[in-house]
Image 1 (cartoon, rainbow, N blue to C red):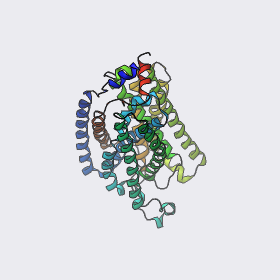
Image 2 (cartoon, helix red, strand yellow):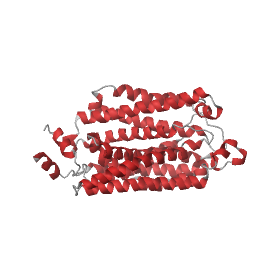
Image 3 (cartoon, rainbow, N blue to C red):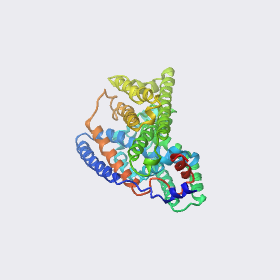
Image 4 (tube, rainbow, N blue to C red):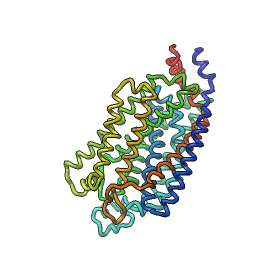
Length: 403
């Protein structure tokens, strides 16, 4: 009882370090934003490509956090209690991301060939026009963001209430919302991945495409969580509860998601390659010809082989200074993955391009990651790092202090 009382009496206040992080992130956002503004005037199509890559990456951090947050509400676990406020802060960035979607919305016809094609002259597109039409694409985007933002606000507001209210009704409501929400998340994310990613090539489809995006978001979010928790481990109260075994748990999650991503990606390739259907295999041919095969090999190494080999070590997963580099590799692999998915599709009315990298891609990543991290650190600094009345918190505290 004394341990529980001491736990509830702690402030759990976030460190002032987050203000410095926000300042640096805003500077990066300004630099990247300036580069994007120049790119938009110089080469609008390349600007949109780079923007889409960076946008899907930061959106994945928020949606991956939403998924892990809801999963934790349903299952519990020490890993979730440590990362809960990180997940919540990341999901609160969704309204900002809805606004940042505007360049993609306004420039969609420069990205998606089917928006400028005549369905009557394309048999494959004619069969998909019931879904691939501009009005439906816009309406679905509005629905996606409405569901994501609603889930985020419901869960975070109840979580803030839990800081002051120990009633079990609060966490029961969050559990119910999460049970329904995880189904809505899976449905909307599948739709969004098809609308904003797969439809870049309107002739191609993959039934596992949405699941690849789901696991990619979980992978990058877990890597990001490891980095943030490792940084917070120097400050109270996290310095008392982030122990090697807790990092080990997150490291195992990172290893699991890495393996599942590799399995899904290989399954997609194997099934399509064996079927050898022209409309399906062309998507992979565009990504192994004209220099893109080097990117494919780099992706296999950075997104799977290297982190997989490093994460097999038990000791590496228990030491922050050794685990952070692996997390950074995983996040870099995610960006390469998105680059490989987006750019080889080519522009509307043009053949798939050969391997190239436009400087606006880097500017987009710097700008959007900067503004996202600035918003994230701002939200994280507004609430205690641990939820005071979380029912399982006392047990976590007791385990950390050897009781």
